[in-house]
Length: 545
Image (cartoon, rainbow, N blue to C red; front, top):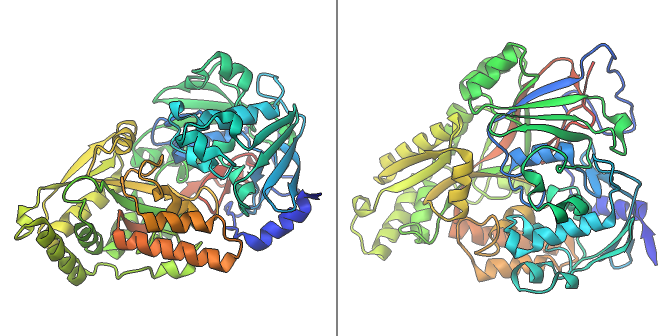
């Protein structure tokens, strides 16, 4: 017997935690018609991203820059609405089995931007493509909830063994490994987006440029892509809910300078400056705050320094802990980021584990840091920190990243006597270096893909996992995560995840620094843009009044 989506969704509300979405002063994504847009008001939004997207193939994207473009151009089986809740999107009707492991998605009549019908095969093709190890999808593990997916991605199993069945052109049946209360949030994430299987099969590089091959099924379509310069989106007239979309165009600049971005906003050349698209200069934040123009919203994200745990001396746990404990996080958020961030002494944001606002250790605990340093030196057979090789902090080009790296460089030298060098590269080069393990200490942020603590922990479950650049693995940690996936009691499952995080912080493969906030300014007459509690943005409901 199958239960209707409405019944399951009621259960989902009980089992899941939802982050409240924030859209400035506007509530978007409900049934209210945001039709205050006037015909004589240009519906052309101009924004800036700091760099070229890593990839605009949903199966390869692994960064917020790419994700914030894909959320406008594609749509999954579900979409997170303006209140932070998953709603049917490409799926018109969703039913689930009594044991909550089998989902049947009935697709609505919808088209790709070129007029081709969106089919169940388009979803099956996209998911199988991402799981094919030959395609090196960093986010393949997000599909491991599907029965047999991990074996396909890592064990050489045939894609035919996947728990995916194309019942007919408009019906997709998905069987999960275990009941997953947040699965309908996952299906709104870009790794679960479909691709036009007809085009992708015939043209493997369909996603590398704008043009006839780049078809999408979301509110907007990409009509121009000047690499490392700009992207232009236009309203997708073939989108199933096109009547809701008020913006006619979205022009995306790629300028990697926060001061220039703010100047362009002040000069009327941009309608939005700052996150989630771009960045505001940290020095400007106090004045913007005083003027009352600054929007600050916390969300599920952690800024941290990753340690390459296979490279000496960072293969020593005590050296890693010494470096982590010696950081003065409060000084960083007060004097550098200045956007209301919370010092992080844990991995999972307090939006998911409220007690993590305090964390597992004291901020700037220099005394303990020196004790760990001494233990580490003894284990390495060294007399003092001067015998340690210089440690390199790597970061991608960005004013705030640079200032944070310089501050931590000074802290480690002053408090521990550790010599530190800095390594700055552009984003595309930087992310490749991290994924290749070609670094010692590297800055990175993790923004929640769905509202569950496991999303921040499962990154480090497997040494060779797609986003585990630390090369760290721990058998007990891994077992706790695996067991939590099968545990049906929410309290027991939460305890397992907290125990796993405690192991993670004790081993310290990353040094948490702060929990994120979104900080931005926007045009006064721009309404309905939804900045979610997961840190992404949706323009489906945006308009100028």
